[in-house]
Amino acid sequence: MRILDVGCGVNKQPGAIGLDRNPASRADVLADLDRYPYPFRDSAFDGLVAIHVIEHVGDVIRTMEEFHRLVRPGGLVRIETPHYTDFSSFCDPTHRWHLNSYSFRYFGEDHGGFGYYSHCRFREISVRVRLLALWRWLGFEFLVNRVPRFRRFWEHYLCFVVRGKALTFEFEVLK
Image (cartoon, rainbow, N blue to C red; front, top):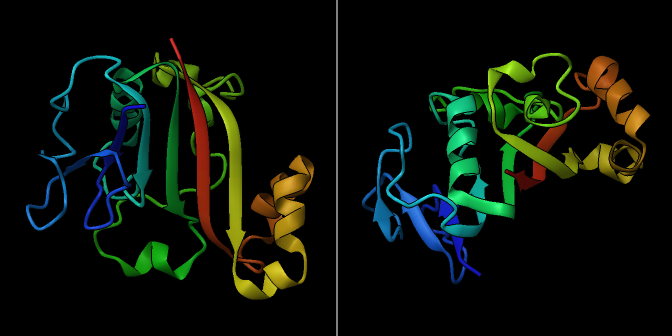
């Protein structure tokens, strides 16, 4: 399987092709992640990972469209990012976006009437919310991840008290 590790930094996924803008990284290909298209052909990869990258890009929608272009139909995209209520979301001055567990719904079936922002589509395979340790130990993380209505309730009403830590999204590319 050909995997593209976007924004790989010094922790490139084993066996993946690394893409980063920093020459001090372990990237195989150096490119500015805010300049499109990336230097690969359409549908060149079976999968793509972007670990703590999406919050740094200038245009989330355009970046997701580029991910969609690069991955073959049925391929997988995995994105990790801080939850917007976590301290790390705001303490890094290079973070441009502060996201929650519904931030990518515009690319799926449940786009809330806003599917016109982009033509590319992804099927959400999973969304995993990691909470701060205290809330994990008390069982809130289990509820947020296993009960969809509880996750919605948590995002709407509880997340500033029961703070999130990080989000992991897995999507299937639909073409």
